[in-house]
Image (cartoon, rainbow, N blue to C red; front, side, top):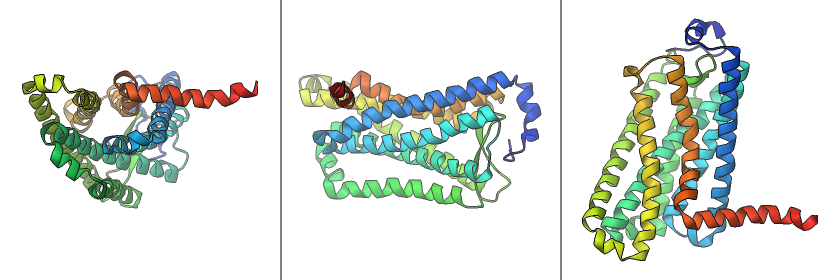
Length: 307
């Protein structure tokens, strides 16, 4: 559905038919603010734990996870602000609404690209460690960084231009492209194609990796280093599954219920996406868990010393 930013009456009837009220505006907006803030806080501990550990930062996998976390946290900014939009039922100024789209879709596209790179890394660790060392060595790894940056930059430039934009509709608790602009349709289709292609690619890598692991499970069961790598694999697969489900629902929503609450649920899947990684890190990864505890103690200790 096309939405004109700032004109409440455009979607008023559709939103009211779905049961939207002042109370639901406050509840939904507050939930968006609280969840995005909680995800940012949780992620800050994870990122600080990785950053402060020289051993982890030397590993390409954790460096990519760190970069992925940065893009995830950046996505929390528009989610937090759109929570305010929802409560106030206003985007305040078209420039502010447009600027948020630069932190939304471009960062999520980069997130998907990093997920593919991580799946390739996990695949090669299991199937061909030699090639993994080659493709993720110090010189080559910078090529991956450039690819990630360019994937973000391409969509950031397009969505910051006057010819395409992705806007948040407070009346409908969801995002939509302004298809009145000439390039919005092309940007939407490009993002959809890239994100679904990423789902297919990392799906292939992870399925193949799991098949190899199952067929050679006895050999891997006796190798402690491989077992630690498997924990990282579990983290990556959980994130990949969540990303796949969200992308498929988001881009194939035409065949699903088109109402206020379903679109709100899809938007909340995007908001909650930033919380998946910290939760998985803490549950599965003992190394990160201990680093988080150590980091939190470092933050608390100075205040105790003054009392």
